[in-house]
Length: 336
Image (tube, rainbow, N blue to C red; front, side, top):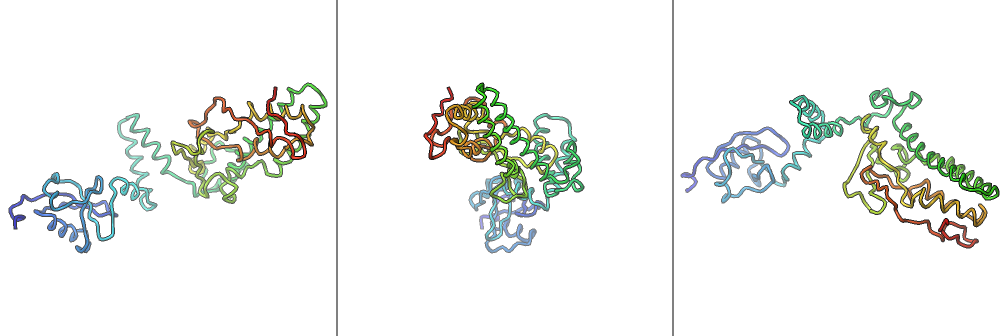
């Protein structure tokens, strides 16, 4: 009865999956809910209204304090609304992605604002995704600057990983220069040959960047998404860095700044220890498998965003119990 004397409240109402808004005026929550259901063709039974901003349910007591022309969301029975998160999920759905890309491009043409443009450019880079395309013919822009011998994205990404691993092998070869005695250098050369053979057998572990490989072999998802594994002293990336170099040329270029970081450091620990071991025993007594895992495999490599790559000393050492074969006496890791 008292509802007859209440001031009419005008609000805007929309549905969960529809961004169209309807102006509705009512003197009570019950009347507002009924009218909203008529506009949106939703059954009245079980229907509720909530604030679009944060999903707070509107009660009869709170109806009078609603701001004029505020935005509400009509929930049918079983539906929920979590404010901006739900709106983002709707916008990022496959059906609306192209519309969102065009909207972002349109906003980029507005008067310049460095902060605004940075946000929009980052959004556009992630939305304008061509990761589903694999061949050069399908995505010519992605292959800009890439040698013509690469016909697919996966083949180029595999080559990219192989090149990184090959560079580590080159550093191992260069370590032999510090060995003065010819006999010890000869033994070291035998180890190099074994390591080269193992790398060739494993195809230089190029599978790490190849999304067409089996899940246990690659570092990315089947779509091509890579996730930062965090710095050498952390279990996870605290910043949740991720990138899909398969999605665009720009992302491919940015991925080149990500590092395959050695937890136990290559120059400060692994190579000096490997040289030291050869000064103490022959190649036959050294666990080449152990050093191979440290130098070239995920056993000791972590994929990290450049911001998570700590360049200071890791202060991690090779395990003296693993650097030699079981039938030989462990070689102390101190390379001095």
